[in-house]
Structure formats: structure tokens, C-alpha cells
Length: 237
Image 1 (cartoon, rainbow, N blue to C red):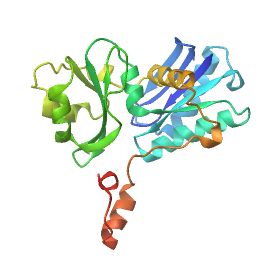
Image 2: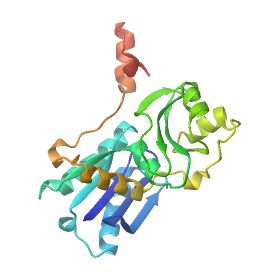
Image 3: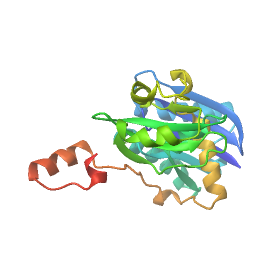
């Protein structure tokens, strides 16, 4: 199966081309340019390098959330546009699952994204099988304490929220440092997660590919606060 995988959930943009679980081409960019400037040229370069056209792709994988609201929309819109003409199946991948799938070894990996205000989007995964150990959620960093203490060690944090977690839990026995350059989200991680979703029958047509933000936007939260409306725990984080 020919797979094109895309990530625009955070500061780094990533694209990968895969034939089943074999990585053919991968590129990451963290140059300060916006994803709207870099993504389509990156996709074009990846397909050209492999001698493919968009029409050859049999499965599109893209991070659907959590992450930057604007970033997610850029990646999802690009994939939907490429996939729509031929109704190519799409996999809206958890950003945190994709982070975990980019690493291998033994122990536990926590994907963590900076959610601002001292909070992170996070989820835990078995590092060897990439099996999910917790659901994706947004929470203050200290809320991870019980999981960190009880999980199988060694434990690694990856993602742009990893530094926040290491600041809090870096001295816990069994918590090992992961170099920042190796803790970024890889296009291959998106591709592997998308392939697993395809095998489990979890792909959708392009029109049904939607973001999963996990919380209200800052503007919506501020409006609710001005109007004195109560937020649910999920909305309020």
C-alpha cells in the first residue's frame, strides 16, 4: 500500500512516503516558516523523489489532533484536497500516537504537547508495541504524577511539551532523557499509525476527515469567561 503521511500539528512540519511499513522518503522542517508556506512544497518534493503522483497514493495519513488549531487545519485541508478527487481513504491520526510510533525500544513513552498555561496534551504508550496506555487528554503537568510513578520504566517524554515534563519528573528514577532532536514528531510515525488504522478498518472518506482539538480555542474560552458560562473540565483546560 502506498502511503503519504503529513503532520502540521506543531512547530515542525513533517512528510513521509511509505510502501506498507517501508519508509521511502521523509522530511522534517522547523525553519520558522508557516506550514501554509512549506507543506505543499514538501509534499511535492516527497512524491517527486519517489516517482509518485498524488493519484498513486492509496492511503493518506494526517495528524488530526491535538495540536495547534491553525496547524491542524492546514494539514487536514491539504490532505482532503489531495484525496477528494479519487475518494482515497484517509486516516486522521492522534498526534500523540504518531509521536510514540516514531520511537522504538522497551519501556514507556509519553507523547506531550505544550498546551500553554502549564498544561500539556499527553498520552502514554508502551514503547515496544506502541499499545495505548491512556487516552489523549489535556491536563496540568502535575496531573501526570501517578502515571509516571507507576508506569513501566524506562520512561521517555517526546514532543514539544517534553521539556515541561522533564522539568517536573526528570529526577524520578527510571525517567531517561530523550534528545530534543529525536523527540520530534516524524512523518514515519504518522504513516505507521495510519497503516495500523487502515488494518483495523478505521479509515474514512476525505469528506469525513475532521480535527479533534480536545478543547475550546482560547477565543472561545475567553468569551465563555466574559459571559460567565461554566466550562466543562475538558473545555476549561
